[in-house]
Length: 320
Image (cartoon, rainbow, N blue to C red; front, side):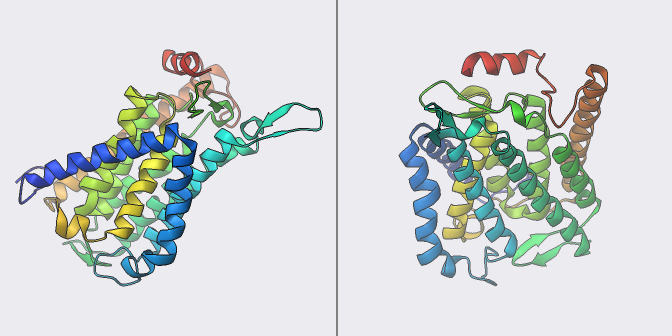
């Protein structure tokens, strides 16, 4: 028995690796080819909504995919993908005869932090909701095993801090290369790691026996490209991999429960520790960011908080 997970057959971890690399591959395909992005995040979801999900994600189904949360998360992730594609590629010729781009509009740059904050808030609400179930010894709710405890409150607070520390969105720009990625340089590695720890704790708390996939694999699928493939485009990677995964889950709901299950150990100590790490990391980030804002006399709603850091400057140099 492991510390966090227990798999009945080692082959399930091989399948887990396949899922990880498949998510990364399809993310790259949708990133570098506009037509692929439109097919994956517009045409495919329309077809699935009309012909597949009404059956595989019907309310009350035995795999728990028919909840309000799954449906809201699916379309909010897809909205993020399509919104980011619009920021990257929508352009027009103005009355002045010049070509103008959507990302040049400050109001348009408010969309990325807004959709990100909404997605985090959805999960924060769910953590508090699971605490409200009062399943102190564990139990099944909406066909998913879960256990209520102080970890839900701790991680809910971590998620709120994660929203508060979103910064620098007016510094978003589009990369100079053919892929025209949405680059957010102020979203440095410290925020990404704090988000990853929070989101993993959320999946561990609320979608426990699915968290090896929708937590660990899914977070690695966007974090690895952020550090090693296309730096500065974390939110774009995150939206696309999240949309890909949740579309798959809504289509093949039995995957994580029957076909390749990797359940958690159901150990309360594990729940407490992962949420404590999430809370500590996000609290530390919030304190550090507040210190920078105060020391440098910055406006957190307008200024770039980390513009003088090497991480920020490296991303700008590579993409602008």
